[in-house]
Length: 287
Image: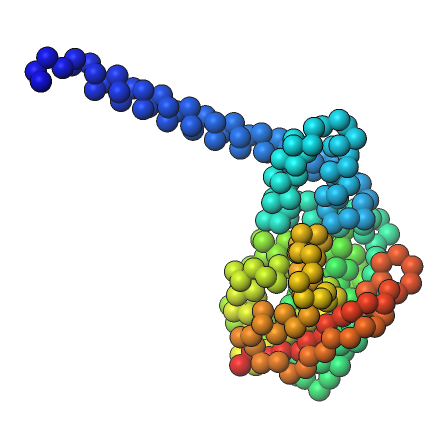
């Protein structure tokens, strides 16, 4: 026992340290590679008008056309798709390209559901989630509400402020993704979510939203709706379109005052003319 090589323990420790350093270097290299892939994708997306959500499918086709092998395409798209869910950079570029210098990718009139919901209500503090060009915030401000809204797009926020000025009202329009926005605590008497790109299946963000509402505060929600069991791998999973009946469960902490699902012309118009489809409308109150 006493003849053991005195340097044996040192050599073992050195080998462990070497292996550990290799693991760290591999992790750093992988992270650096992912960052490079993300930056390349953002550079491709910037200023490019694409119809699919943040250009994910278009970019996949682009990589394939460039001759990138399929396994590598899938590896890159996995990284890019995951980041698109968690970070606002891609959504900002995508919406900026859609709004463009002329804006108006949606209607100027306020959402009829909201107009009906606030009739006879004493104005307070309102939050317009993913406000776009501010049609609902401008409307609420004209009724005396202290209207705040946020949107990930620089151009949308700038257009909202211009529209408010033309209407002779004041709104607070903040450029922010939902990931960055400070919702506050028991701050809002009214929260508006109309066609909002918001992760309604993420309990963390839904919890923040509900916690930001004052007792008795209202939530006005309107969006498209898909059938139960619909494919969740495409746009619907990313932008928070609910399944039939799902919204009641997601916002079960609130008291549902009005709820309907029906086929109708969309209040939100992209391009020319309205499109008919299933929609969900909900008015809920925080107990």
